[in-house]
Length: 168
Image (cartoon, rainbow, N blue to C red; front, side, top):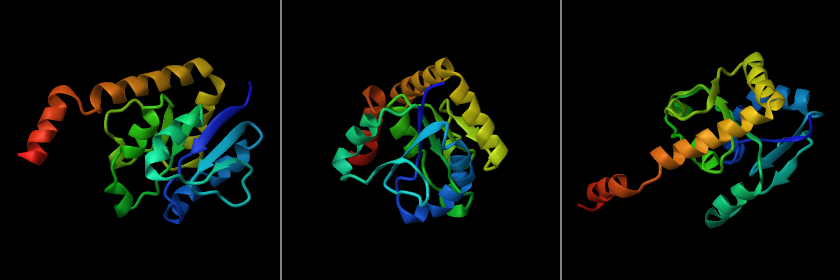
């Protein structure tokens, strides 16, 4: 098995420290098996490829350029995170990168992502599945990209509905 590029998505900054704590033991356990990629926030004492945050208008291009194999999207279970959107899934999914994410309300949106409880064994089992089966990883990424483009892009009647709602 060659190196697999996995990102642990913590794009916001210091407010995501609790989210990182969920996966820190996994990151350490897998550091010899994967190439960790972080953007925006670099965890201490983790050997990784690091990319500082970029201006908003450069973000889509930067995300696509990372050439990721898998994205981990942890969220601490709390009231603030329960009120978030699925934007992170849409951003990463449009690049065709498969996702493992915390099973939390905003991520239960019908997208073909792997949702897990915030337990070491659940995250590790899901990660190992993706690490051990490159074909599965590619299929899941393709399915996610197709679902995002088909069901979440604003176009045709959906775009007209939004225009009517906001510009009426």
